[in-house]
Amino acid sequence: MNLSRTLATAARVLRQLRHDPRTIVLMLLVPCVMIFLLRYVFDGSPQTFDAIGASLLGIFPLITMFLVTSIATLRERTNGTLERLLAMPLGKADLIAGYALAFGGLAIVQSALATALSIWGLGLDVTGSPWLLLLVALLDALLGTALGLFVSAFAASEFQAVQFMPAVIFPQLLLCGLFTPRDRMQPALEAVSDVLPMSYAVDGMNQVLRHTDVTAAFVRDALVVAGCAVLVLALGAATLRRRTA
Figure 1 (tube, rainbow, N blue to C red):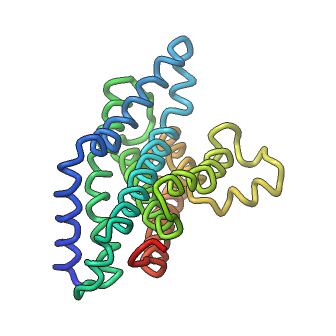
Figure 2 (cartoon, rainbow, N blue to C red; figure 1 turned 90 degrees about the horizontal axis):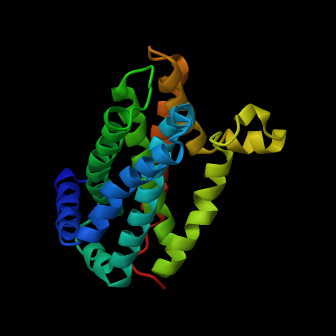
């Protein structure tokens, strides 16, 4: 992997996104809007918002980054941009890393906005450090970026890319422990949830919600989410195709 080519790819992606304000709004503002709505859906029981707000602070950015990244990458394949780029001395790893770097930069902004709104704007009660909450939110957004890059290799159209959301995201959403503790699930479902990265994202958020110090469980959860993001990025580089068949 060549650093200069990776940075050049990231800069190109950011220049393209600058001319697509709707995508920027989707990535940066939609998670904030969802969290804002959630706060006032539970206006009569703020303790419910405190209980699930931290978890959703990680889940919303993951979903948004997955959707935007998968569609943006597929669009570049279908219009021939990827084929032209890979005809140049640009490796697949350079391309994937450049995309991850560009969308990762936006993920930092997105996570910072959502975390700041939740804690200082909506009064989310967090026992631990807000910086730890931001860290997990950022890792979740990066994981969503990695998953989006990966699944885009298997979609032939933007419609198909959207269809991957029920297959990739919704099962994790149901089994991550958001709706019920994972140890109360049917044993087979609990075993499945133990290998899903979103489960560790929710667990990490809950560690920050309940503990003032950095716990061993929090470190484990953060490392699992980060490791999954790196693994999926590697798989994305391995499965990257120049064009859609």
